[in-house]
Amino acid sequence: MMIRFFLLITFPFAFMSLPGSAAENSASVDQTKLEDLGRALFFDVSLSRDRTQGCATCHDPAQAFIDWRENGVGRAVSMGNDMKSLGDRNAPSNSYAALTPDFHLNNEGDYVGGMFWDGREADLEGQAGGPFLNPLEMQMPDKASVIARLQEHTLFPRAFKNLFGDDVFDDVDLAYLRMTQAIAAFERTEFFAPFDSKYDRYLEGQYQPTEQEELGMTLFFSEQFSNCNQCHQLKTFAESRGETFTSYKYFNIGTPVNHQVRKANGLGGDHIDYGLLENPVVSDTSQAGKFKTPTLRNVALTAPYMHNGVFQDLKTVVQFYNKYNVRGKAADMIPGTNQVWGEPEITENIALQELESAPALDERRIDALVAFMKMLTDKRYEHLVQ
Image 1: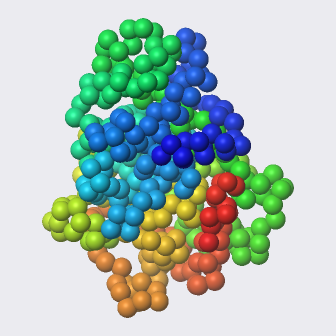
Image 2: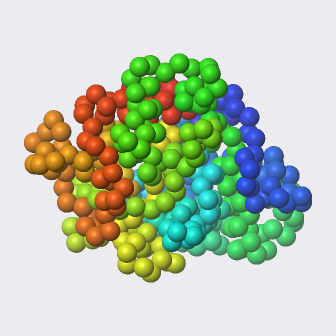
Image 3: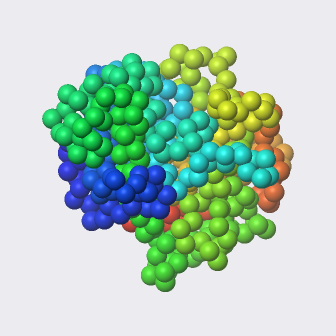
């Protein structure tokens, strides 16, 4: 983990704050020092129960901020601090996460934004504090235990006191909040959201797409030929600089159960992940099975896909969406295999209006969409794209 820390600080990217930081609005806190503290916390493993896991373990900056560890379930879900506990949801990349709006209900009655697949934390600070106390992740028993570990550290006590005052550790809840603010400040730096992919360079006139990428781009942004932009476009194409390729809304797309994960984590076939309905502030049963639309930034590198990591390949994901517009028995079968897609975990509330709003795609167009999505890879990761 220390090796990755030194690799990180040698990357040629400035740690510039993105707009929207809560701490940025506080004149009493040195923003650069806050970000530096957050960076150190992000890579530190001593704040997990057995001192084996940090934020970067499941959000590795060398791998587009995903969990790259093999753990017997195809990296579909992450392994906990004890090196055996397995969760039930895929750890999403936290690149570009700082641009996610706080969790809210918009004027159209749609839930938008928030952190985690179900939006249960409103903002980055809330997300940053979650894994430390999660019994399947970093497994610390309570906030007081985390703050005690901070105080045992050779560097953190002085850094906290310099930033927040000598009495910062007197109130456990406040000290914990300060820790999450520091991590969130680091996650709001440009390092997590450089906007320098081939797509961004194309917008600046610095990259010429291939014929296949050009076709994929046309298909993606077209309302006539695909339904991608129903969920994965925030801005109009004319305003697409800074596009995060997600509406931040929640949909049930009929994702099948990942039986391999359920067998490994012991939840079994009777368990149901209700998605958005598991958010403590959501009680409307029509939200069951809905999950937050993820960004497509770096999507070529963030496999496995879906909230449960059930699909290993990006082309398979496009084929899965395409099945809603294929007619006949072919819609039930995974192309090129003798396997069926599998039943949705929750059959109610599937977003058929969005999913069935385009004609079926042939192989050439599916490949073109995949080629375009590979264009959304940050420059420093382009060498990893297959």
